[in-house]
Image 1 (cartoon, rainbow, N blue to C red):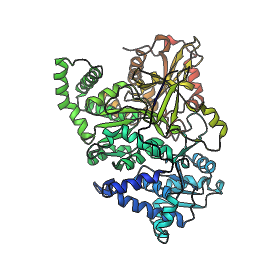
Image 2 (image 1 turned 180 degrees about the vertical axis):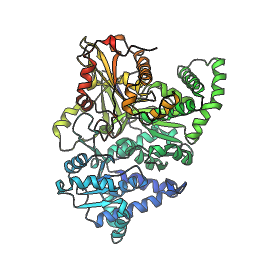
Image 3 (image 1 turned 60 degrees about the vertical axis):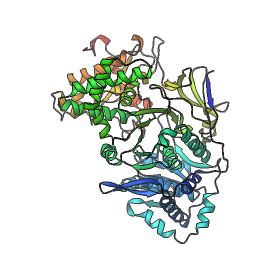
Image 4 (image 1 turned 135 degrees about the vertical axis):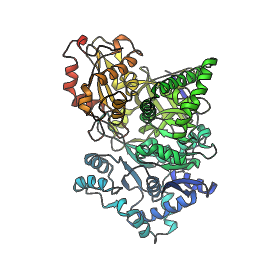
Length: 608
């Protein structure tokens, strides 16, 4: 059994809770800017002491409205400054937040509130309130509902003016490390969402240790970041707490369509993103170049960037010709992309899905070191992460201090340490099934290199076994195909079948530009595009590239392009944009059956 475990750098403090991280930050640097919020075309700064004052004022409002220590409070909102303000105000009031994804359906909202036993809920928009209202009658425990769009946060502050500071301090210090800090529900990609009990110690000890491990990122002069992935997800939630602990200036942009303008004005030094964001940045740049008649130059620049970074990582000498080519492309292409992203980004932390070496090397050549990491809700986000001083593209890095990772006999990744959750809420059976001798069983498969860098090789429950007995990891094929600009999502199928096949959806955002660049009608519908010969040839090329990375027995022999898209609203994606494989294979069972009803040779012959 392969095992890597790193002792904690920072001694544990069993009495500490998350609020202590803010108290310590205010003591150290009361005037340091912790947040910048949109203000006209610019950003308005909020210092550490100003933030704490706002937190205390809002906490008093919760207390005045009968919220007691330990009470569960649901919260549905986009990624804005107010998210973290509410988060810490609830911590200061002694309450426990139950985050709800901003895109959650009425049934999902009901499940989170009902299962958690929440007594109150905070909703940002009329849309959130409308969805909640659909199930309000089935939630008798909810006694308070606050609507942010009606100014209820300001009303709470007003109502709390009579509460003593001493009462807030009493509430703030009740919880210790072992107590529940938040109840985060899993995305439900493999069934009914389970509530993960994350403790104060999970966040405090992980933040203190991760801050040391990522010191180059968090302590660089003027360290700052823009959060845009949903704060209801454990990844952004952990980072929002870590940045307060580390004194990093943080901004928020809830609409990813506004991401590049936000980066341009905020000029962050590091980013937190999921692979799909990096794919979108790359694909948008490529299609923009194509539209301007410079597509060939962009692709040459990308190839040079990837080759240059790969040789550097392997410790090989860069040939003179490549050095010259790289310098030219740096002026023509790379510098413009850097400027579009604000000009200051030195690092990007990527998680939630495999990034792929191609994108990692491309962005590395822009001067952006992508620190890919690995973790789950049950591990308070990161268990491993690449480090600024040493990273390996294609891996998810070494284990963090205070964390242990081992591989079971069948190479399942198991984790223990300061970051591992306490239990599944009101579900002792699931909790017992999730642990093996004190180690959390992730369900993911991996391998370690000699230096302890972990590589994710697949998901245990998703391994397909063909009728010929060949084991196939879908992700190895899906990730490179999804990198194509016109591909939205991919699901590889073939369990107990004679060969591997794929369901493909098109990306409705990228498709019009690509169609225009290829001399086709940009207004073509998804249904029309699904049967268009040029579109199908492009998808075939993406599949051919993916097939080159696997054996013949593992390669995709047939595919179908569906005349629809998979979204969270359609029930086929989780809030973090992961595919719900079991839902898709059920809903599109007829399409899958059709793939195996005709001889292989008649469809999808490669067009080179």
